Length: 249
Image (tube, rainbow, N blue to C red):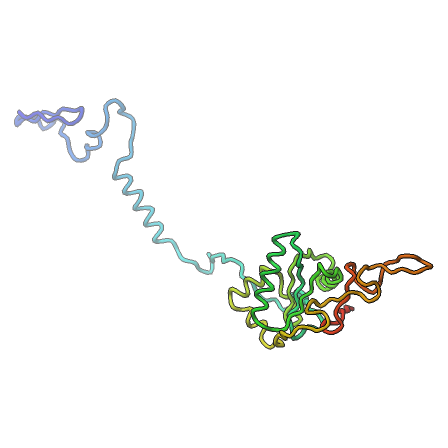
């Protein structure tokens, strides 16, 4: 007689066993492997997991592709609409063949001063004609810039115009310079003149003849009054090398 132990069940095999006695078979393997402490509990076995994964893979491989009934929703792409009004082109008169830059030479705000210095250095490397307008020397430059860009525009320095067309500030100039596109913008401009003006010494401003740079004029009848010929610093633009003030309609 052979005694076989399978987990918690014992089956006795005898050569003289009765055919009517229970005999384990492959269909009873689930019962043989089940735990007697939980006779009614059903646990998923490895075969159930394999069947479940196979069904999922079959469903994914047989999924229909995109057709007229199930189109994919693509991301919207920018399209050129001829009927849409484009942003107005900002231009500055009298600067078709040169660069115009509005900047400041004051170190009050270090980041602004560094941006102005870096942009001027980049533009000077192309050796083309530049009109550098320092707002710290004359507040009239800031008024010009407001008229060009608009009163509602938040002004920050520097501001660059190339060939009379507005380009942008420090970030735009750096990006164009790093990508190599800035060189294309300055093509065709007048070469720079490195000679020094004999009147102002290259400063582009001279002292006012009316008030001798005090920005005050004296008269016997009215006493002291503000000089109207110069700016707040008692300076006037050099008549030899500087441009005429712009007028916008």
